[in-house]
Amino acid sequence: MRVLILGGDGYLGWPTAMNMAARGHEVCVMDNYLRRNMARETCSEALMPNPNLHDRADIFKSVSGKDIRVEIGDCADYRTLSHLVQDFAPEAIIHYAEQPSGPYSMMGFDEAHRTFNNNLNATFNVIWSVMEYAPECHIIKLGTMGEYGTPDIDIEEGWLDVEHKGRKQKFLYPRQAGTLYHTTKVLDTDLLWFYVRTYGLRVTDLMQGPVYGLSSDECDQDDRLFPNFHYDDIFGTAVNRFLVQAVAGVPLTVYGKGGQTRGYLNLKDTLQCVDLALNNPVEQGDMRILN
Image 1: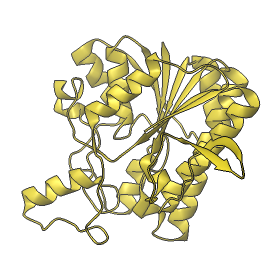
Image 2: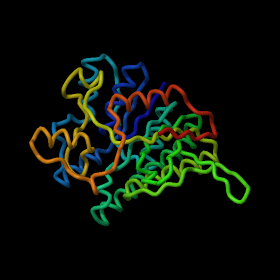
Image 3: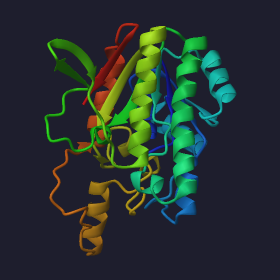
């Protein structure tokens, strides 16, 4: 398939791009280095240096023989994204192109504003680019289990059957996120569901827990192909942060009262989830939510 990966420079985006190319798909990645720039601004740079996207693609080709097309551009700019969708004609779009940090989104007005504008505009532009130029395209969007918050009832897989005064209907599971970042992901789901109902898009929304790890079949071919590994208190995912703290002899960070239970996903499991979604597309007019 022709697969367009948005946010292809990211912790998940780059390993996904290599994995898809290795499986024989025609892959194009788009990124504007927003995550790298925010990390520099907050002194939260990755543990290891990472080549830029063009160099990464060259290194990957040298060890695998596979091509990855690279486009540097902002998904929050509709003309830039829509022109690429028109040119590449993707059969699937994997949408990672969002500011991914809850802590960053809560630092102040500027960080909240940046998170809100980037995340919602990127998703809105993906929707309209597909409607205008690739109506058969399957949108696979990375959601988060954080959308659900911490309800005191079982979390169903995206949907809930509600009975009220003798009548029943299926609704999106009620979501009440704990950060602005997670709230933008809730709004993403609502936007997608509106356009699925109204215009017949096909969408898979993957609600994932925190991801950890560096290794994949493709990353392991050359150390320069490892993803951006953050371990700080802004962009560091919890397990990656704990591993670095343990190695450095720093006491592990306590979150809240220290009593929450969370499910974690290895990077290889993320790749498997995305691959399963890609190879089992939903019908038009359907939105599938997978926890």
